[in-house]
Length: 200
Picture (cartoon, rainbow, N blue to C red):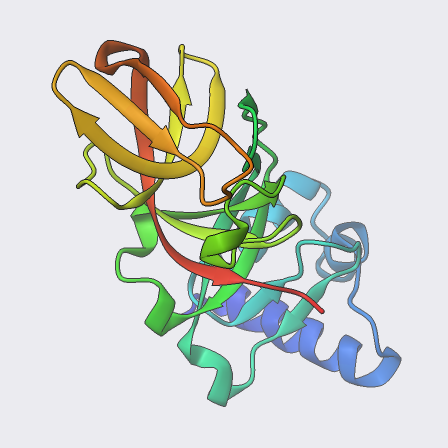
């Protein structure tokens, strides 16, 4: 996607800064260099560069801007929206961070997000505590799909989905745990799991 003149200038500045110092400039330093007094304006330019695939923001550290290599242009930045329980339901937390994923893991970028898994109820599906699940936003799920579901309007949980008449069964992949069985009206599907990211 084409860059504006200012976006190109900021991209080149960040690239040179990182090459010279080994870490990225802060938003304040970028603003100072270009005579921009508003950090919000700088942030908007950076966000456009991230969306267009020229910069990547690491989601776990500060000063985390990095230029994207031409070979890595296949990466897609999607939002990291907090934590989901693979155990008893816990409250969903939204945090404004993003994570870069290989483009083959993301069929619908605008409808894709990532959640960090807490708990071990899905270990027999090889989804472990601390993993990140790639979720495609959908309101409906087919029986047997692994979903992020909101139970009772506020508690997000990661389970296998089964519709049984007027009820929904949210089944763990851990023989030590029991399924959650509730009226279908109390379950709101947030999305279906499409992939898994694990850090070693």
